[in-house]
Structure formats: structure tokens, C-alpha cells
Amino acid sequence: MPQQDRHKDRTIPIEFDFYDTLTNLPVEQRCSVTLLTCGSATVKINDHIRLLQSPCVICLSQYDSFSVIHTENLSAKSFHFDPWYIKACLAFENLDDEVEIDKSYEYDRMILYMFTQHSGSFQGILNLTPQNYIHLNELMLMIGAETYAQSDGFWTCRIRRMLRQLLNGIYDIFVDQRKLHLFDAPEISNPATLCAEYIHTHYAEEISLENLCRLANLNRTSLNQRFKKQFSCTCMEYLLNYRLKIAQELLSNTNMKIHEIAESCGFKYDTYFIRQFTTKLGISPAAYRKDPLSYSSFEGEKIRKL
Image (cartoon, rainbow, N blue to C red):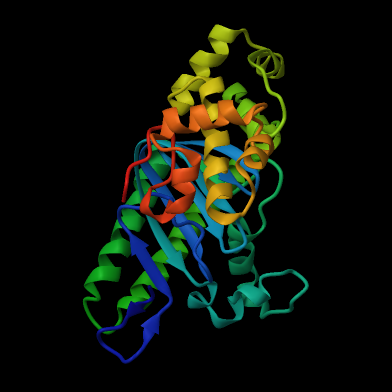
């Protein structure tokens, strides 16, 4: 929610989250700076699967799609802001190059491209050196502290100044990494990520371990070792879990028959689907369909009632 200014009768279009789990990204009408301070996360950004490892920073906007696949000891903090908080002419509708704005703010608009213009290998993710991390983390902590403290009537001005410093620092990192051609590498070079993206696209088709090994150019043992390190399960377990997750969505949101759901999720026989669903989730598909809101989503362990 926007911050209510305790010193004036107004709301400020910013939010700070000291303990972000990444599950609520992106935020409507906001750009988000998210700093991973500990652990890792495998996420899907704009149909691209990426492995985030701390320390790194993510720049997202309302135009992005984002979902979390798996996390490991994750700790992150986020600052969300409406671009016009920096300057009124930087509202979302004015961030396109074809829109004319005051030339003195063209640099600020260019910096915001890190949030609004993701494509190819660059999806707003920047890995950080220890020095980068210390600098950005210090700014994030000061912004967060001031957001909650609102120590006097000029608190928004101080946050705006620190936000500019934060964005300038991130942009400098982006420029340096672009000079090193870090964004010119193939979009998916991690074998586990490559196979996971393939599963997300082809889960309804027949997929074998041999298929995935050929795709990753690895033997079974090596591929499963990489998968377990990144996703805490083997690649075929990941395939089954993902199919069951899609099945949950179809049971909750469609009137499809059980055998139709089984087929659309890649199960050759509906009896096998029912058995796997019941074994893994602890409830039959028919029982789940009767009251899906009473259960949490399946993420690789048995579902539990909320």
C-alpha cells in the first residue's frame, strides 16, 4: 500500500519490504528494486527461467511477468516506486522514447529502461560484486529506514535523493556488465534451467529422461545432480511436480473432466494421474476439486489445509 505521509495529508506512491519473498512481484503501477541478500531462487521472468544467486539485484516493472519456482534460504528486500515519484514527466505512459519530455530528464528515463525494457538475455537481473552489494545494501537500508520513520516533513525528499543514488549505482553496474558482453551470452546456458524451461513449454507432451539428457548434453547422473542442486529434486520429479501443479489449476478453474485434465497435463492414463495426484498430494483429484480453496498449492510436497 502507498505510504501515508504523517506530516501532510497525502499518500506517497512508494512501499518498502524488508522481508520480500518475491511472491508478490511485480507490483501494479510500480517499478521494483529487489536486492537478494542471501540464498538463491529459481524464477520465471517473461517466459525465461533464471537462477538468482545472492548477491544480485532485480529491476522489474508492472510490464513484467514474474513467478517463483523454487527458493533456497532466500532473503531479500524490495523498494517499490511509481516513476512519477522521481519526476511527474516520468510517469509510465511517458517512458517510451517516442514520447517527448524535457531533455533534462532524458537520462532519468534512460535509467528506468532497466525496469521497463527487458528483452533477450537481459531480464533486469544484475549480479553484484561484494563492493557493489555493500553500496546498494547501504542505500536500500537507509531508504527503508526513512520510509518507516518519516523523521520530519522532508522525508520524501531524502528518499527521492537516495533513490536517485541507488538507480545511478545500478545503472553504472549495468553499463559495466554490458561492456563486458555479459548479456551477449546465450539466454539459457545452465543445463538444469534449460531442461526446466523445456518442461514448462512441453509438459503436455511425452518427455523422457533420455530427451532431457540429450537436450542438456549430460548423462543421467550429471543432469540429476545439477537439478537437485538447483531445484532440490531430480528432473523427472520436477516434471511430475509441475504437471500436478498445472492439474491443480485446471481442477480449480475449469470444468474439464478428470481424463481430459490428465491428458492435457501429459499423463498417458487417467488412472496413473489419479494415483500420482493422490499419492503426492494426499487427496484425490475429485476431492480436491470440491473444495480447492481449503488447500494450499502444491510445490513438491503434500498439500496441507490452510
